[in-house]
Image (cartoon, rainbow, N blue to C red; front, side, top):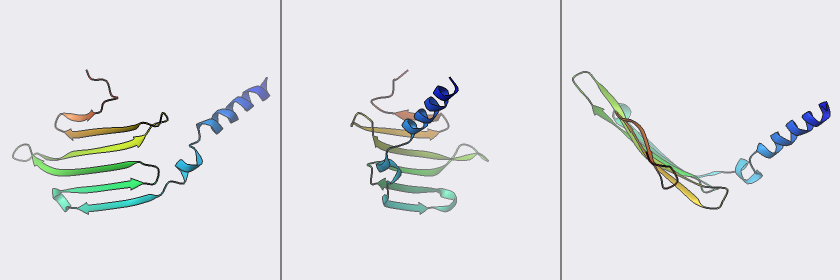
Length: 105
């Protein structure tokens, strides 16, 4: 019985590991612009079709209250071969993602 449990654990770990092409993915494009206290902007693309872009700007909410408002998106290819894209904003209302595959309230 002990050997069956050990075998099941080893098999589970092996199946959970990402495929070789995922582990060997390379960054093929990277841009980064640090705007100091006013915000930032970056983007990257990888060889396994993952990409992301994000930018942030400083927003004043009151006399002594300011915070970064972040907007961005990321895309990836799912196990079904479909490309999924998520757009988001994070501001005074929290993190707000939007995508066709995410259920809406």
